[in-house]
Every structure is written in C-alpha cells, then in structure tokens.
Image (cartoon, rainbow, N blue to C red; front, side, top):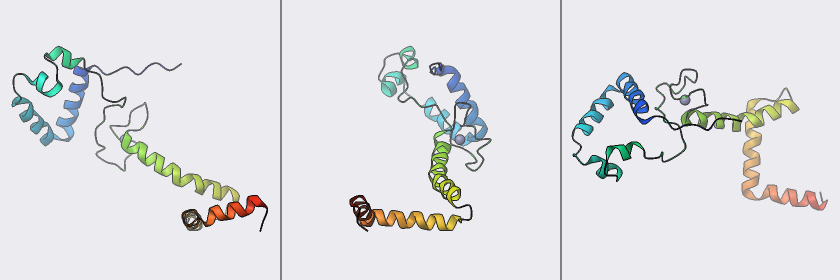
Length: 149
Ligand SMILES: [Zn+2]
C-alpha cells in the first residue's frame, strides 16, 4: 500500500521555492520581495481571509498537485528540477502523454508491418480522422456490421 502524500511543511516549501527563485529567477525574487515589503499590516486577512498568520500557514492546498517551477530547459527531461521521484511535472507529463498518443499507433503499425514508414502511418491516421469526421467511417462500420459490402 502506498503512503498518503503528505502536504509539504509550508515554511520548508517556502524556503525551497525562495532558494530556487534566487538561483534561477533573481529578478522575480526581487519583485516578490518588493511586493511582500509593501503588503499592509493586516495581510493575512486581505490576502487569505484569515485574521492571523498562524491560520494562514494552516490553509489547505487548493489542489492535490505538487508545487512546481517552470522547467528552465524544457527539452532536458533528465534534469528538469520540477520532475521529481514521484513522476513528471505537469509540463513534462503533457509531453509524455502527447508522445504516448503519437507512439501507440506507430508501435502498433510497425508490429503489423515492420517495413511501414512513419509518414505512411501519419497519413493513415489523418485519413482515418478525416473519415471519422466526414461520417464515412461510421457508414462503413454500419455497412460492415450489416454484412453488406
Ligand atoms: Zn519536468
């Protein structure tokens, strides 16, 4: 059984985010410092709707997603700082899903015909999508299931 993911300690998470900002986006870190400096004294109420700092630190996460930084080198999957041991960051998870969607028909086509080219498979996929959109595919399935030719 997998352990429940624990919410990060907000102080430790803030420290880690701050260090990452300083290292990779110093201008954003400086702008954030200015924003924080200029916040009014009652900032927990204005920004978070709670009267005290302690209550703000215990607010639940808005979504069950890991905190991430934007990948600095989107092409470098291996060294993405947002991709952790728990899986890919949302950015690279999208790439993985896209590659999977593209690679599945390519793998199936090459299994059936090892000599098939990528261009041929992509053309077949485009033809199939066109046939589905025009209703040609549904008509062919209808004829086939009725036993007509
Ligand atoms: Zn990533």
